[in-house]
Image 1 (cartoon, chains in turn yellow, purple):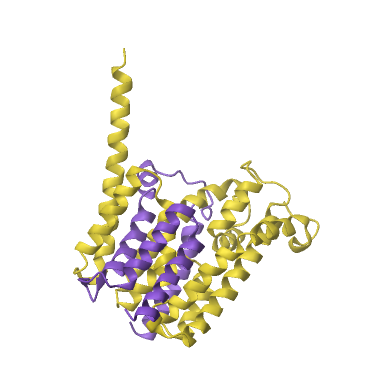
Image 2: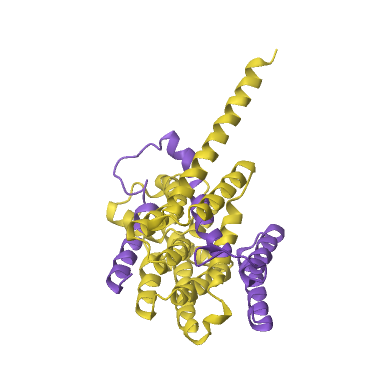
Amino acid sequence: MSSPVPHWQHPEFRRGARDMVGIALGIGAWGLVTGMAMVKSGLGLPLSLMMSMLVFAGSAQLAALPLMAAGAPIWVVWATAICVNLRFVIFSAGWRPYFGHLPRRQRLVLSYFTADLNYVCFMRRFPEPRPEEGQLPYFWGGVAVNWTAWHVLSITGIFLADVIPSQWGLGFAGVLALLGLTGSLLSDKATWVAAVVAGCASVAAYAMPLKLNIVIAIAAAVAVGVMMDHAKQALAGRTFGGAP
Amino acid sequence: MTTWEAALTIAGLALITVLTRGFFLIPEREVPIPVWLREALRYAPLAALVAVVVPEIVLTQGQLIHTWQDARLFAALTGGLWFWWQRGILGTILSGTAVMLALRIGLGW
């Protein structure tokens, strides 16, 4: 699958970049919010820059911030980030048919850069799950735009946050971003019920030490959601079996 | 959290980025996805987000807020309604933040 020309000179690189430019505004806004939220949560300039440059996962960063600010134990912060990132675990199974044949070192590097929108764009461009010429240049073209938009605006946010008074409550923009992301995951009755259970459980168990309310809320919501799925399947099976 | 603890937390978060994004891509052999995991995966990300977001909106210092004059409530409501109609995260952030700024700066809530 090695291309005769470097990735960045390949026509698919430009196409990957162009497909990503259209949605870079959304990525940028998200980065700006994350940057500001990091400083506003009291993380300080050096740590905010470190988090922005290293973690490169907006929703996990935003979810981790209130916990870090509240002094939650490190493992709770990590567990929360893993849960927020679980969608990437699913996506990674989707990447396997395209990149599974590459050397492991390269797969590790690719893994780090596969954000949500890269997945969406790539699967739209290459719907057939098999390796093809031009996939890697297309991938890197999208990453170049995504990565740049994210970091430029995230760092802009970090520096803007020092200028803007915290009394204005702009850190709340991070919560609003998470709210929007939550909305995009609500699809049917079961997901709504799971969300209500998670919200109530998280508030009700808030007095628990170690920020365990997050873990309890996740366990409760997953249990309710999976039970609803099973009940629905059982009901459908009975109706089907009972038909004359 | 001390500076070193925060730095360690951040380093761990970076590792989590790689490990979750490459979970089924990094192993040499193809790994089958167990059914129970597939089922739980449908709800876990949603649950984690809601569990973090809701206390940030309705609690102050660990107590339920006892006044409706809280800018966060109206900002979240505005953002939520915007998402309901327009399905855009950017608009959710902008509309909610606009209400936040109006109430905080305008009314001094």
